[in-house]
Length: 471
Image (cartoon, rainbow, N blue to C red; front, side):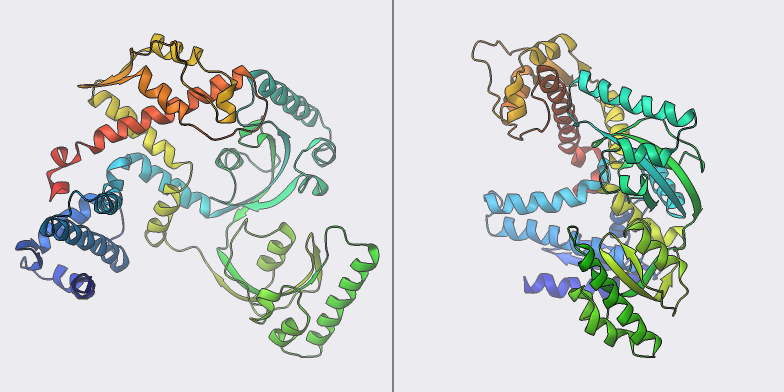
């Protein structure tokens, strides 16, 4: 462990000066295996094709690379290469190293560029939500869609959006504001909502949009340039949800008293410590972390962005109480190359990453002569009942499950393998426990299972397919 630590420290400092040399020095020697500058560069760029090769990115990859190599040699030297804990740790390192091989780079590039372009724009929207469970039956899903469509048609014919939102929306937070949810930008709301919002012009109303929450009718009310992030301090007089009129009046008096102190020249940090009900930030003189569009309630966000640096707002109300804000600093959106690595990281954790994975899987299907047996698949789905929705599904004892569901070159994946996978699915589902819902869930589970098997098939062949990865 000590050697690993020293080695990492040495190379984190050495790597960039070495890259600048015209020769090809040996960067490290592990168990008599010499790894040169050019070899490490090649492996780094292979696994990080489109990342900006800044010091942070290189050092992070170098540390991962060294740890991986040292673990392998240490295990081999001590005869631990078959130990379960070693295999688990090695698998974790390997998973990090293989990650770049399981995205379609062309698709990822488009997603990163799209995310950056969206980040430059703030969009204000209102919505009407008609709830329906993600795994709802087709009939329940259709009923919710038709209800949303009917409301949308009334809006198109001239009825007021905000009034219909107050009457019909099942989003209890935004309906009191006529459906207004403030400004959004990339990564601040569910992806289907974001995708449609960025396609609409101010004043336009969408068709019903499906998300995991139900159907949304979206109206864009404003579109403007995103100023970036902002840092503020605040003073808050808390108003509970069930506060009486008397409680509200006391909170308002408290915030007005704090504002008067500020008007008399008292230090904002001191007033925050003395008056603010947000005790966490009060200890820091009201200081809040940096935030951007879509991270705060609309009233707070608007006050923060609309105020000039150094200015203090008048008291204003949100759903949480009364606030006074002091604007400390702003931070504009950085150039694309500076933002790229962060966007790649966020996309990897976001549902939009599935698009890149889907493209890759389609390519792998062609490469490995994928063949799907629909008849065998339908037979499996016919065996599914509502117990799957409760996490209690078991393999039918009388079922003959010998047919292949799909094949990849020399590998076959059978009905039995998938039905056993279903039997191990223990997640309990919300919503109606209907046979249609259970079969729809089984199809979703199958898609994930099949994709995982295809990725695993590719993973097992990486060393042969990419010799540089094996080194």
